[in-house]
Amino acid sequence: MKIKEDYRLYHEDATPYPFVPSPNWDMGMQPMYLIIHFTAGSTARGAIDWLTNPQTANPDKRVSAHLVISRTGEITQLVPFDRIAWHAGFSYWEGRRSMNRYSLGIELDNDGNLNCMDGSWISEGGANYRDDQVLVATHWKQFQEFGWLKYPDAQVHAMLDEARLLKQQYNLVDVLGHEDIQQDKVDPGPAFPMAWFRQQVFGRPEPLVEKYVVRHHRGSDDLQRYRRQPRPGAAPASGQFPARESSGPQARNPTSLGTSGPGGGVTRL
Ligand SMILES: [Zn+2]
Figure: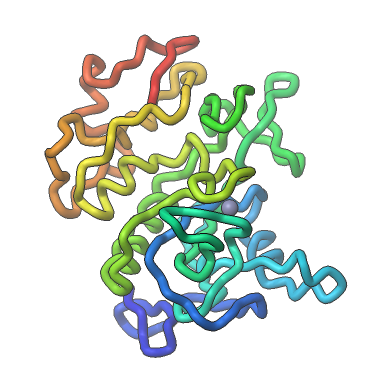
């Protein structure tokens, strides 16, 4: 994967990634950060339609992002990286307001927070999900516990490849969640392994801040493979990340995980 002079993504063999141009952008980009979102929808196609909609009747509703990553890891570009995309509204971070100008925005196809009804997990849009697709957790901005749709490994790894490329290309200083910079936002939420992810991108230890209260649902502990490195100061080896299917050695050692077991055990990610 590489970025060419037109600020668009290409494969190593020079074939372009899918590009669906959004009319919603400005000039004047000064990238410093990468902002991760979830789409709060059930398909990547639906998100792409929304993020490229000119909203001629309601121009205030125009939104966009630089990239959308599907649940199978397919990347679609909507806005070239030298243009401002409209993914963060009234936002603030480290003395800067209106973060669109300073950030590249990536939307992960993910239906966000889910309610449990009659034993099934249902999104706001009415999509149904299985127990094993859902993490049960209380977001630090909320008092109520929700289900949160997990991010498949293929999607997380595509995001990681992308983040490493963008960090190198634009000398980015950090990766943030939308929830970090805008008051009323909760994305990408407890199911995204943000601390692990930042460690992988920047190779620096992350502060051991307990951000979400996670209650594992029916013993599903597959997010354990995204644990942060255990010792602050121990930078991860370059290119090291969990195997896509099998659990790593950390996940096989229950004493390192801090979980009290399935079904009601509280674990803090
Ligand atoms: Zn967002």
